[in-house]
Amino acid sequence: MLLTSSEYFAFLAILFFAFWLTMRWRQPAMGLILLANLLFLGRWGVIYLALVPLCAICDFMIGRAIERNTATPVRRILLWVSIILNLSLIVTSKLPTSSVGIALPLSLSFYAFQSLTYTIDIYRKDGKAAPNLWTYLTSVLFFPTMLAGPITRMTSLAPQWARLKVPLSPEDGGKALYLIALGGCKKFLIADYLAENLVNRVFDTPALYSAFEVLVGAYGYAFQLYYDFSGYSDIAIGSALLLGLKLPANFNRPYEALNLADFWRRWHISLSSWLRDYLYFSLPGLRSKWKIFTYWNLALTMILGGIWHGFTWNFLIWGSLHGFGLAVNRWWQVTRGEKKPYSEFFLARFLRGFATFHFVLLAWIFFRAESLQGALDMLTILASGTFATDNISPGYAVVLGAGVLFHYLPKNWYATSMRVFIEAPAFAQGVAVALAVACIQYVSATGAAPFMYQKF
Image 1 (cartoon, rainbow, N blue to C red):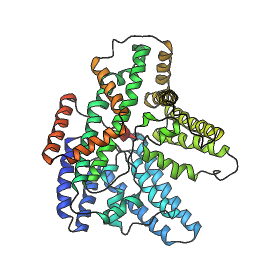
Image 2 (image 1 turned 60 degrees about the vertical axis):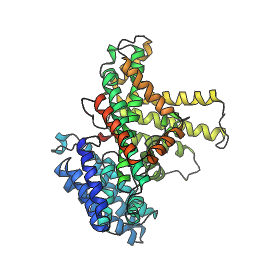
Image 3 (image 1 turned 30 degrees about the vertical axis):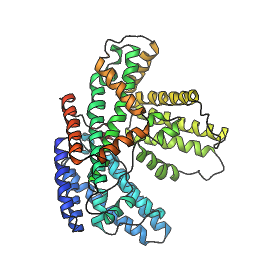
Image 4 (image 1 turned 135 degrees about the horizontal axis):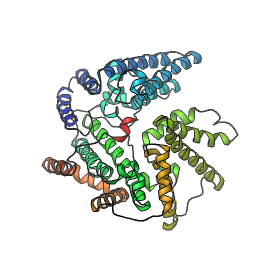
């Protein structure tokens, strides 16, 4: 069930009314959410109805056992059982169908990452176990986050059920509708349009295009990926907010970053935070006097992040580029003095942002290309310097230009537009959403492609 399908929005609307009508009886209302979680999972395959809840029950019991035990060796063993269990889920869901004997269309990576936040936080004493299995299952199987996040820490999400206020505030309801409509526009009007009108063709057969067209296609992919994934995040966050729950933000204008570390504080924030808090800080040597461990662990964290995306040379190179880029960035900060401010001159900021974006763009070519040879072919054509614009349609140029413009608009404009929508009468909000739906239907007659990060 795609988050952009009419089936999903009908499912969400029915759940919204049923949930708030039953919220005076909290446990039945939570049971309704749990049932919705299972229905959502079941739409991807009956196997998930057995596999995922069983693993979730195991992690709940492990979390309880870790919290009750004081012996460090026992706690460590229990934690490793949880880590191995969840890593096994990730690996199994990524294996080809022929290897496991069954089709697993839904990757379980984001579920596993969320589940691991629970047992690791309890082990580190950064959070407490859920009060009961009911609450834990309702939280860890929460359907908006199942496909591609945002990765939400269970020790933060589970307590929200007890703090829900009835009824849903008009402000939260308006914000939820705004985010869902915005996410749909990002996905259909920008991301899918860019993909279908040049990006896919350039990456599939780069030899048919000039260097300029390949460059414009690569630019298009950078913004396609951003609007696809941030659109998903907006819909997921808006869906959760309709049910009274707050999920973490996942994007913050990432192509405005002035260095690579800044980029990863803005891009897929929930995953980069997870990699930092649960992988990077767990690697050995960080407390050593040898600074080389800091740089090595930064590189290793991103290399492992690349391999998680897929067991291919392209993802290994993508992760290595970001890993060694972050290590160099960290070395430069230490060398020049971490507290020394950067120049505030516009030209200096522009050049740093320009260089950072194009480094990220280079890495995106390896991330998107179907093979290492495909990525090298694109780089070879880019180096040729040939120029032609025959394959760049006016519509593509307009949509790409609009995507760039919307990304770099002042941040307060976004906040202002949201506030105007929230403060508008319900009738006006309905009209605005209807217009967004009409635009989406007009532009995307072929329907929605699956979200790009769903496969990871």
